[in-house]
Length: 236
Image (tube, rainbow, N blue to C red; front, side, top):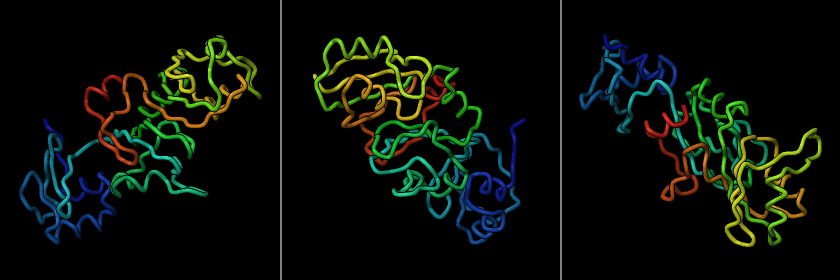
């Protein structure tokens, strides 16, 4: 039997404020369900394939949020920022209210693909090193890269405060200054420290893939979208 829930609780679970605020939205005729206006907060609806609008904005009921974002430069991946705006200002307020979290933070000056969710188990699976979800970075270096540099990154380099050498899973030189580096870990400033260990410096850093999911060419910096069911299944 399909699970049902009253409209007030539905809006509350979806991040539209306190129960009282959600009730007011409904009573003020600012909510439609499957194309029909509903002013009864206690009206029950099946959650499966539930579409609704709040103040004219269309939504679909989702038990959890699974998003991707093209992170722009000069944004921080934290709710409490120090010097720059947070990426959460780029999301609709109801998603922020649901306490979505970044899955593996990117530095303020790093751009590219980031996944965001409010599903704790999913966050752990994608971010935990023991699950070995590979991440691919496009790295622009200050100085040209030769074969010896690539070999060193693949063989493993020694980083300060690390007992063992750290190696890239794959390294592909795209131009003399640009390479694609695949990592399974997510250590602090790992790419920058690995490039520094081969006597070079990162000038620009962009994450272009997480697992099987590549940063879409049509997703511009600052934009976000829901993960498709196929993308989500590939990560789960």
